Amino acid sequence: KLSDLLWKGAGWDEWHLQEIIRDLSAFSLVTTSSTENSLFIHLHPLVQAWSRDTSSTSSQSYRSMAIQILTACGSKDIGLNRLLLPHILDIIRQIELHDMQINDLMSFGEVIRQQGHYHRAGQLLQKALEHMKRSNQATPLNTLQVTSLLADSYWSDRRWAESERLCAEVHKQRKQLLGAAHPDTIKSAASLARTYRSLERWTESEGLDVEVLRQRRQILGLKHPDTIEAAASLAMTYRGQGRQTECEELEMEVLEQRRQILGTDHPDTIRAAANLALTYHSQKRWNESEKLFTEVLRQRRRILGVDHPITIRAAASLASTYYSQGRLVESEKLFLEVLEQQKRVLGVEHPDTIRATANLAITYHSQGCLTECEKLLEEVLERRKRSLGMDHPDTIRAAENLAWIYHSQERWNECENLELELFERRRRVLGMEHPDTIKVATSLSWTYHSQQRWSESSALEVEILDQRRKTLGTEHPDTIRATTNLAFTHALEGLWIEAFMLLVPAVQAGVKVQGLQHPHTQFAIEILAFVLKKMGMHREAQETKAFLVLDASHLHDRSSPRRVRSPLLALGQALRRIFGHSRADDRSITEQVHDAA
Image (cartoon, rainbow, N blue to C red; front, side, top):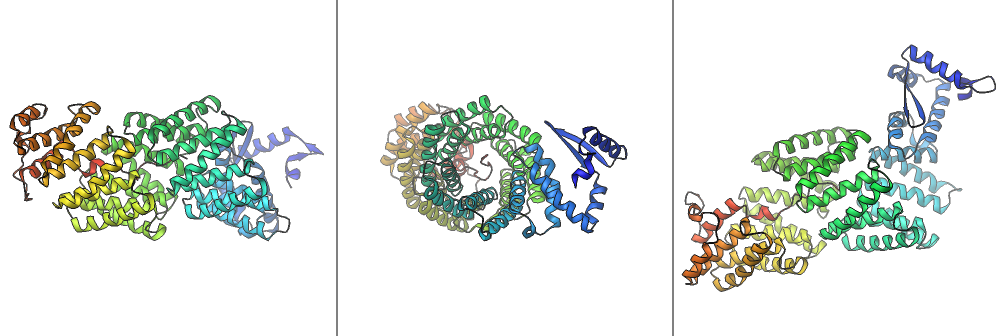
């Protein structure tokens, strides 16, 4: 017993303990460290190995004592739990989980989940739940508590379907037992909303998020941490719905409140900064995103350690920002580092490892390494089909990226087949108005366009433009681009009046919103000048061409091996090369940035 080792006489003696530590340190058998007010004694690895190899009856009793001590020491303190982690992992390697007590399973599960060992944590909490269900002394509320912890563990491990099933069960039963306004019921609603968000079920997520925020503001007040957390959750749902302005406003408010109340180094403050950085990334505000992500990564490496899954995700987000800034060498280097860490820490089949593989593939594509890129993306798609199913959002993204590569290689049949399947799935699951559905529709329209299938391309572009106008308004850059795309296709069809009626407002809006020299504005002006000439309005065509900043005389690239049907198509191909006006311009690399929550 500890009292036999550490007590002197009939009571505790601090000097006696210090003498023991000093003697053991003198022989290098232990080292000491501290965190806040706690002193930790680290046994030499050889002493630990000797202890593990001892199989006497006494070693079993000391092992039980070690479990009790570790359970008692477990807390929400990240630094403290990092010191406990190797000892907990060592203990659970030595014993069968069914021999552990419920409290020990729960305590160990929470510590190792916090430290990023999500799958192993799920195993411990699953065993704890089985014990609870067999126990005659367990109350329904206690069982629900363990179920909730297991659901959280599944969510952290990206096992969202399993998490949703448990979250829904917990929320339903807590509403019945405790009422809708009880703090535990509100908490379970927040967990369920988070899982819906991960599954991209935005309407259900938003409904719960809004109700949770209303209740917490009413019951707890505006500055309570749980209220701030509810606002952060709603902001992430807004981002998923493409409501960037509302998302940014909430996230800036959340970050400011957390800095004031919790301090800059608190995990929740760091998470708020990461989420705002992600929103900046979604808005293509790369410099602001990079600044925040760099600071987030520095803090997470210091607080969580370099191999924690959340730290690795922060590195992936920064690598993504480098990619978006065109800093491809730095991006590739960091993505390679992330992939190696994910393989070592999580294994090759883990969702985060698969995502890291996809990120590296996309970086290879940008560097022109198409063979390496295609090989990695095919591997990603097969793994996601196998582990997640074809309807899972991550699987759909993998198929989108592979279709993108096929398009780059002009493998039209393979590209079209994938994009058609994706478009139907996106439209069925998300609706036509969702930004992701519009993006894949845009990709499919450009595939038709590249094959000179104008009528099929224009039919899709009409639908895309209608949705852009409804959701973004007429002067949003994406709406202007969609208008120009449809006008371009109409021109290729010889529908000069229809093209003209679209191009005039597109050019006006482009000049107002993006400026005269913006490549998309210049592209629209060049097409308008060509259309005016075709309509016999030669003077107006010359006046329009005067607004061109670039000399377009060299744009008709006759060295291309591909035959085209009209000078306008050759012009369009050349313009897209120079201005970057292509299907990739409408595409976002959704693999790369991780939600910080």
